[in-house]
Length: 198
Image (tube, rainbow, N blue to C red; front, top):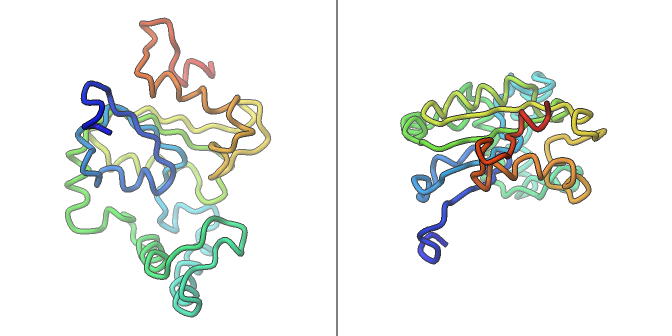
C-alpha cells in the first residue's frame, strides 16, 4: 500500500494485540498516527480478578496441549488460539513487563515515534485502568492522548474489551477517532476526542 500511495499518510487502528506488536512492524517508521483500542498490559496483576487470571495463565498451556489448541470460541470469548500462541500468551501474562520482557523489545519500542490516541473502557472485562496506562509507558517517544471512557459517557450501556468495533456501536464510538485518523486538528475547526466529550 505504501508503494501504491507514496504520498499518502499512513494511519493505523490496532485492537488489543494489534497495539502490543505495533512497534515491531517493518512499516512503523511510516505510521503517522496510531489508534489503540483496548490495548492493555496483560500481566495478571492488571486483570480485573488478578488471582483468577494467574490461575488461568497456568491452566491455559495444559489445556492447549491437551486439545491441540485453546478452545476459546467454545467458551464464548474469541477465535480459537493455536497451541503455541496460547502458550506464549500465558507465558507473557506472567511476566511483569508482558511482551516487553523479551530481549531487545524495550529498546525497539523506545525508538518508536508516532502520535497515539489510546481509547479504553471502564467496563473492560479483562483489565482495569492501570493496564492501559502502564502499557503506554513503553512508548516514551510517542505523543499520546489516552481517554478511559465509561460507556454511559457516550450513551451506551456496555462496550467491554471487544465492543468498539461492533456495528451497533459505530454511531457512538467510531466518530470519536475519526478526526485523529484523518489528521485534522482543532485549528481546522475540528475537535479531538477529549474536546468532543466535553
